[in-house]
Length: 224
Image (cartoon, rainbow, N blue to C red; front, side, top):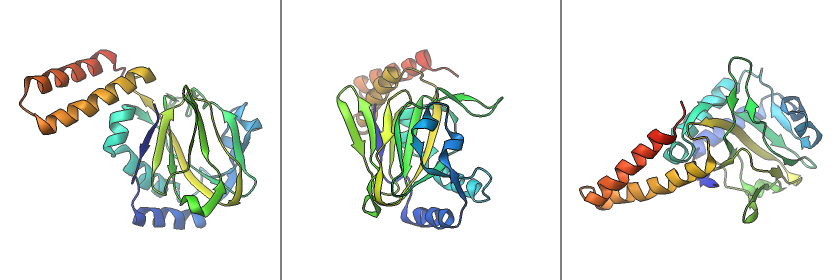
């Protein structure tokens, strides 16, 4: 399931984030990549020792994890600190699947859901599309600044070469309470209908049935 989330960050937050990134130290992105990804990864990433990282993470992740669309689609259990990536002219990230387990010893987590938050406008760069392989073919994303795309972490994907300008994104992952992506999609769709019924017919028997079914499916499938 691919979910786009508009307006994760507002204009003031974006201005603050880009201002800090302009003053921050970037290093070779290969240093954070797994063995296979190192061969296809060509970008720069904010150093994990940069003093701005905590504030950047508070802004971006604070807004993302409180967004209702993120919570309804991801069912987050463990949440990763964001990586801030920069792609200049000639840089790209070839086909890869995200590592199944990330994080330090004692703080590792399973990657179920991958998220990219776009930090600058599509007109700021040429190329740089995030391409995700799906059962319906390859889908390409180049979203407005402040918007995010969520997709299953086991999906093959790549970032096309930037041919002009600079692409800025924050990427993060979460371990979901609902491990199976097909079950997450069923719950997401069911919750859409549930919320609609709660607005239009809050006292109806049908609304109560859908509400009960949704809640008990979450109870049945959740792993915590």
